[in-house]
Length: 256
Image (cartoon, rainbow, N blue to C red; front, side, top):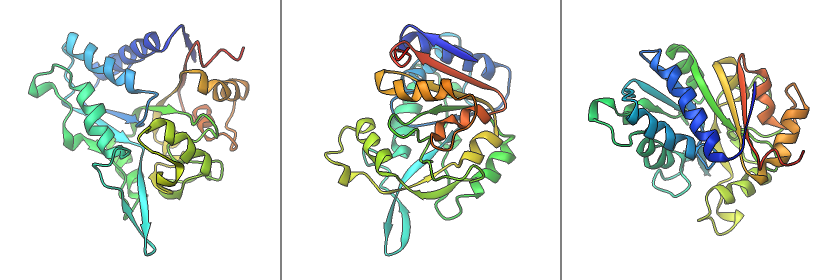
């Protein structure tokens, strides 16, 4: 289903309410989340509306899709979680903070319910997701210049599970916009641990791709014109999800 909105704010409100209607029906709810800009306003309204409607998020579980990795002496290690670009930092300083807006302690998203893939055994993340019963809703975004989803680029196999990957130049360039404190592309890490394309479509009950702003015009055009997965544009993995929604604001759809 394709849903079009006049602006980002209306999109975020509608999406937040949709998610909350699903959360209310389950004792435990698993939400897949990206870091970055595309879903930030949605996280804001998730917090605001859940407080207003008194929806308990104590049993909400967040599956984060990726984190930056450094390679030193042929060994991989996660970047400092206090770094401005750390996805772990984003999950706690942005997502958790926004979602817990004006909530009593017993209604809040808990630190221990935010999960990241392991750098030592990345594929174990897929097994963990299966034990949770899968991801109820996976929120997705598309790279503006190369269509990356999480850190999956156009060389990623469709059957790839959670793994460590080398970031493409275009992905790293896009991430300068996501984290404006980067002064140059040389500061953007070259590696990341990421859910795979298989992780997304095999373990997700509902996939929701969000496309906002003029910089996502190319992504919108490619996603809407191609009704099936296209390896050249990884975010088109949305077309392989069991149930899918594509949320688009007017600016992203202005190529028409």
